[in-house]
Image (tube, rainbow, N blue to C red; front, side, top):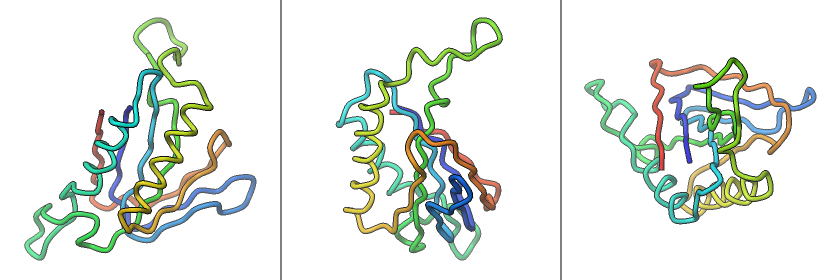
Length: 145
């Protein structure tokens, strides 16, 4: 399981000309689910994201969590994070989870974040999405479970 986290001032996902998810300040999370990923890994990843101190305090240090800044989450499924680029010139997605299992875990992540009390927006699983955001920093992090 891989996640790319971007601290954003705002972010939105558009599918077929319609905004399907948007947030103000918070984290844009691109989430990739691999074949062998488990609920336990997902739980760890969601807890870790919620507790990461990647937002600035009054002194400009990254010392505050998402909850401490009343931030939101925009979670976008992205199987391309599982791409193997080591051989040839075309990405291989052999490590990506079956779409049904990936969707199940993706939706479980949305539910976990909501249960933690966060405002959560999402993309549309499996759709072609246009993601627009303003990166704050820029601050981008990679997390693997």
